Length: 48
Image 1 (tube, rainbow, N blue to C red):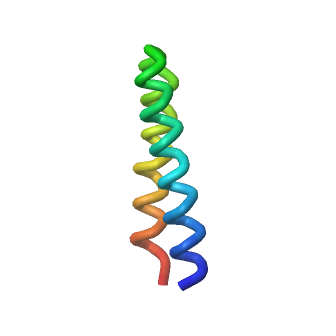
Image 2: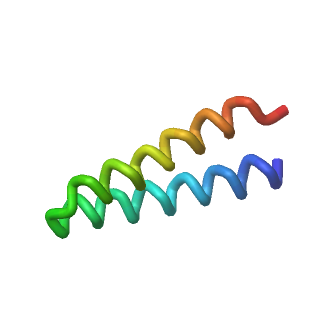
């Protein structure tokens, strides 16, 4: 449970930063940060 909370919160933070980077007109940084967010989803799904 605590692991899922930490991984989920980290992924949400990455997503927020990615969206803000896109909004600033930095698409390459936005792609990197949103990619990190999607990677966190994979980690979250694999937690047992």
